[in-house]
Image 1: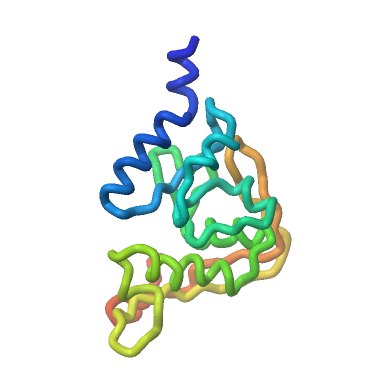
Image 2 (image 1 turned 90 degrees about the vertical axis):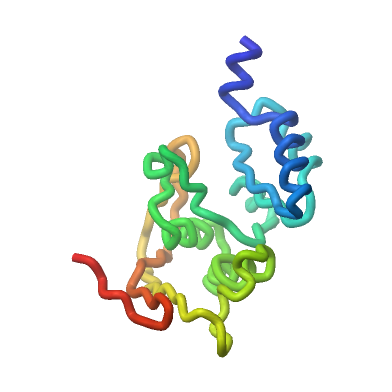
Length: 171
């Protein structure tokens, strides 16, 4: 039974090992604590500044500095459709449009060395731009464990500029 629990969830041991590896590369740890075998309070105590955690903590007013699509083999069945959809979920949780955009662009460029010249429109920066349309309405987003998040705004892809050149939309 203990072996089954370990396979079914995330615990202190896994987070400690992840922190060891991430620290040796001076990187943050990104975790989803939805299926934990350890109390969340213990896991939160193991996090360091810059680590990225689950959506439940946002209900306390603690917003992530950045986020990702958490792309895995079963992501499409867990509500990870695309990056604009993930941004829209943040709006559904009450984040402002400008804060969601900053967490998708500017903040990662400051946090992750690989993105130092990204996420800005500064002269000399690569012109890789996602053009998004913000629509108003009633939208439902699939969250973890098939729960839903309701929002009144949603980002939709409207265009792409890659290397300074507009990419035609595929049919």
